[in-house]
Image (cartoon, rainbow, N blue to C red; front, side, top):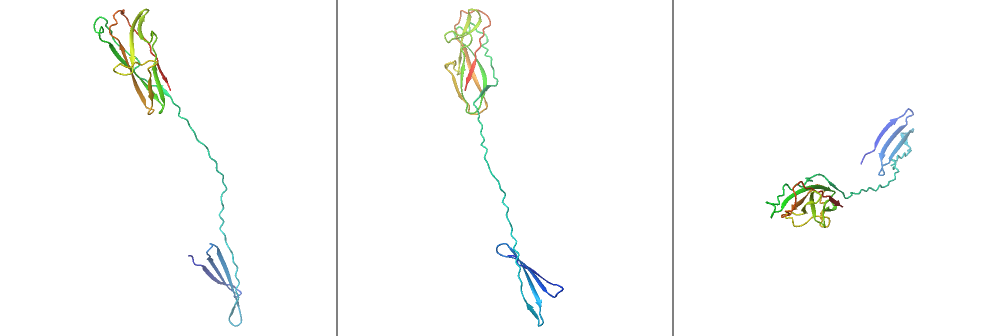
Length: 204
C-alpha cells in the first residue's frame, strides 16, 4: 500500500500550510490543506480540510457485431488426362497362329475425378457392331470380330450394359486398362488394314 506524501510550506503571513496526498481504498486521492494560524501564546491550531476527489473514468467504446455466413460447394467432376488411347492388335494370321489362338492387346486411359465422385464408365459398341458384337472393318463387307474386357483374364466384357463402377478416394489421377481380344478361327476374312472407334463414356 502506497504511503501518503506531505510537504510543509510557510507563507509570508506566517501561516503553515501542509499538503498531504494519500490514496484511499477506493483509488481516490485526497488532498488535505492544513492551516495553522499564529497566536499570541504559542500556536493556536485551526484546521481546515479541503477534499479533492479524483476519479478515473473508464470510457467504454460502443460497438456492434454481425456475422457473415461462409459457404462453398465442391462439385463432382471427372476429366480425362491422357493415357494410351490406341489399341493395336498387330498382325492377325487366319491361316496359322490365329487359327486356334486369339490375338490379345490392351489400351489405357487416365481419369481424374474430384474426391468422393461416383462415376460409371462404359464403352460403346463401336461403329460397326451387330447385335452387340464389335467388329473391325477394312471396308465394305470386310469385318473382323473383337471384344473388350474389364479384366486381364478377358472374362468380363466391358460395354454399355456391363459398366465399370468407380468412386474416387482422392483427386489423384487413376489409370484404367481396357483388355482387347480378337477371337481365333476367323478364317474367311480378306487382307487389309482393319479399324474401329470406341467411345469411353463417364457419367457422374
